[in-house]
Image 1: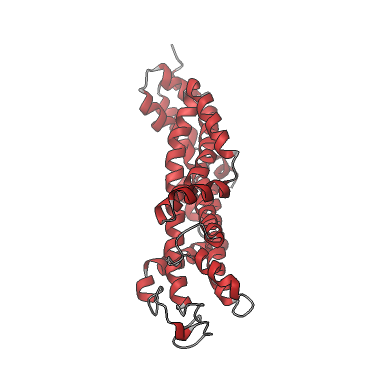
Image 2: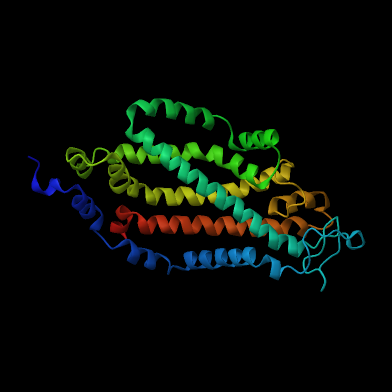
Amino acid sequence: MLPENLVDGENLAEAENSSGPSSFVQLKSTLKSAPVLAALLLLGAVVFVALGAPFLGTVDPIAIDPGERLRRLSAAHWLGTDAFGRDVYSRVMYGARISLLVGLGASFASVVLGLLIGVIAGYIRRADGIIMRVMDGVMAIPAILLAVALVTLSGGSLLTVVVAITIPEIPRVVRLVRSVILTIRGEPYVEAAISLGTPLPALLFRHMVPNTVAPLIVQGTFVFASAMLTEAAMSFLGVGLPPEIPSWGNIMAEGRIYFQLMPGLIVYAGLFLALTVLSINVLGDAMRDALDPRLARKL
């Protein structure tokens, strides 16, 4: 007979996470800090720009006007024009939409796929060795080189760029989830649930997977920011999105030739990219601090 306090694995799991302030209260307190508030407002402004790009942009971002090449700031072109006479302000506005879409797509896909594969590797011992050797092989290739190779083979498009950025990120999520699952397998409430004959799906997704949420939030924000930087680097190298798509990476790539003449062609898009990545990382760290019960007890 199991001790009475171990019979109900679910109640024990709840007791394990009930000490300290609730996640909601801790999250609300964390969001009141000045750096997090500033990051939240900044990221909200970028999202607003991305959603409202068709209304905020002054002209068509891909409209070419040879007579307006390399114009400086004016009432007609708030941030000037590029070497093709395209409005830089409108291209930066639309670039927020493309860059955020790449980051969101890559982070969502890598977290979902990494979670599923990591749970299998952490719980099924026979599959663990095979899965982790494959993941180690993928991680042995530098992420930017693997992404460039995949885009080169499949052609440049928004979907292929997202897939090419996602694949190198999956092993990192798998290793994270696997380590959490291996640690949780020895917890008393998990052993109690196994002894009671809890179905495998319920055991995994009720007792084990919820414990991966906090680290996955941090990893997801890292992948989000990393995907945006990787897309910019690929576009800068000329192997990312097609040149006509106004992403921040493409804007900087096209402006590097004229940097000494008009540095704003790189600075404006680069500043948006840097501030967006910074705000995402700050928010990710703050949410991790709020949602991790072990850290909540210390705060």
